[in-house]
Amino acid sequence: MKLLLADDHLMVRKGLRLFLQSQPDIEIVGEASTGLEAVTLAKQLQPDVILMDLIMPEMDGIEATKQLKQKYPEMKIIILTSFSDQDHVLPAIRAGAVGYQLKDIDPDELIYTIRAAYSGKRHLHPQATDQLMSHMTETKKDKKEPRFETLTKRERDVLREITLGKSNKEIASTLYITEKTVKTHVSSILSKLNVHDRTQAALLATKEHWFGEEA
Image (cartoon, rainbow, N blue to C red; front, side):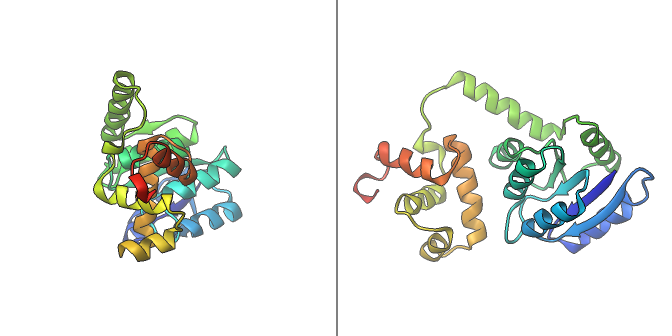
């Protein structure tokens, strides 16, 4: 199978390459250091499986996964990250990832995950599975409308700026944070409010009068 590595840390990519290239059924066809580069290389190289980091420059792993799955639904994407919370696990699975593993995974388990993905099977880290199960349980218990209280203070700040029609760049400038951080917060907001895009998030916040006269 053809495999593409996508991680912004060179040492991580080197370590993965060193280990994975010893597997007779795996051919590493390329490496990407940003989400945008991952999308570009995937289009060019058409890998069977992609090991995708979540937090990368230019475009995060969730957005890269979403774009690639829309154009190449047969491409298998495995998230390999350090985050195991719902704010990362759920959006990644919704974007189309068939695997979700943490970077401290046992090497043999990673190989199993890659081969499972190639065969069309899902394989998640136990912590990721726990998050999915918890989310399903919470959803069954409480099917009320999305709650403002589920957002962190910073997420509320970002949502307020979204309702004002500001771009990620403008929000970053207003809140003195990076665009990358803004994108992470936006992704979390959409997940928590169960909406598909920022426009829906802004409409919901305005409809519910979450920011009073400010919105």
